[in-house]
Image (cartoon, rainbow over all chains, first blue to last red; front, top):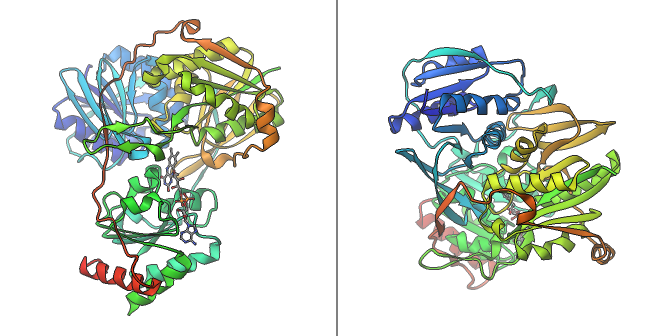
Length: 301
Length: 255
Ligand SMILES: Cc1cc2nc3c(=O)[nH]c(=O)nc-3n(C[C@H](O)[C@H](O)[C@H](O)COP(=O)(O)OP(=O)(O)OC[C@H]3O[C@@H](n4cnc5c(N)ncnc54)[C@H](O)[C@@H]3O)c2cc1C
């Protein structure tokens, strides 16, 4: 069946993507790889649920199989949820189809066979608009479209996996961090912080203004001082607090991308030329070790 | 000797991008750099050559400006450089980039492993490794934070949002590594000097025999600007500045 095909390893995101397709009154076919997923997906308003049955626990191993399936089905568009697994699978499918792909589209419209998409470039500094005719693969992050409801039947199709990559072991990552996306206020530390113990000055300020603690990518991924869920930016959490206060954060575009929707941005950094000041409402140039405790005091009053 | 190929992209430094008042984008003053995470890919190739055996080499698809990247890449440890010198790189989409790299990889020949980064700092599209895998029909492992080799077999740890996975495949294979996989070494003077003497092979667009017409038509490129107050408190002592900041936050009703 022609129309739009959808896949996400996150069921909630698959539902949002069906919502997108239905906004445009297209037909939506959702792909999945287990019976349990198929059962969940029958109520999200798709026209059909396609249960692709094979023998691999890794969905990435179905890249070529999906490419062949989409070609046979005469698909117009393949929309994939932008998760680590989704992005990988989507690019493999695009590779096997040798077709166009738009990664992490920030806006999307499909009209008479022509896809118009926008996406961020240079860490968010630039928006690029693209037009594609013909079959295309797109990845879309969560939170952009509203899910709908409606029931669909399941069609089971046998597919062959590429089993050259074998899964030996899987272990859940225990989430230690807080969900910054819900936070009203956020205090953010960057690599300007010298020692892990010094997180205390940030925690004290956070306690004074009832804020959650966030950080830049390096603080979490390289120094491991805070859980990875707590780093903010284009590859981390995208937040919209009332108040965001940064200290020792240079404000590179990839980080600032994650705080664009904050109501008020405050920057404390010793380098007056740091780009964070161009993205801030209020700033103080100076040593955070001096300024932050004073600010905590001033707020406590 | 079997090669471990690190793919990298020479990109404009996003920190130097100027957005004009009419939102047009000025890249003229932007310096070039090896895309941040591609330095991790190069480091991973050098480390893999150490444990797996073989020779680390670097490969880039770029226009004339990418010439500057060759010495930089080689100073980071690869023994040989390969450069697809093609003006077409400037308009390449994900499909063309992967096909150009795949065609060059076929020319380089005798490889055991192809290493890409998570994504380039300009497009951050994260398509290249899976697409190269498809073009060469090789096994692909993405989101890799650790690799161990046992004979011809690669065991990799992947980091996904909610889980880690240990997977295994036989070489040759394509991997995309995350920046947490390693800490790229900063080349010393000696490495920089030695880099100039390492061999570089150049391919032209015509050598590759692929169609360079992009499938993604770029219709507009616009700068993103955020309108903020940009008020710096710089009067008086630090204590005065902090007081002024606290007062401003109270006025905004965010305290
Ligand atoms: C593709 C890609 C994706 C990325 N995604 C993200 C992302 O999602 N999130 C993210 O955060 N980064 C991301 N990055 C990295 C990003 O480009 C920056 O490197 C990073 O945000 C910098 O972190 P930082 O500001 O903590 O460190 P630095 O840039 O090192 O800045 C440290 C700052 O501390 C200041 N400082 C030092 N000492 C003091 C002191 N005593 N008092 C006050 N100030 C002091 C310095 O002046 C400096 O401005 C990404 C990069 C790429 C290429």
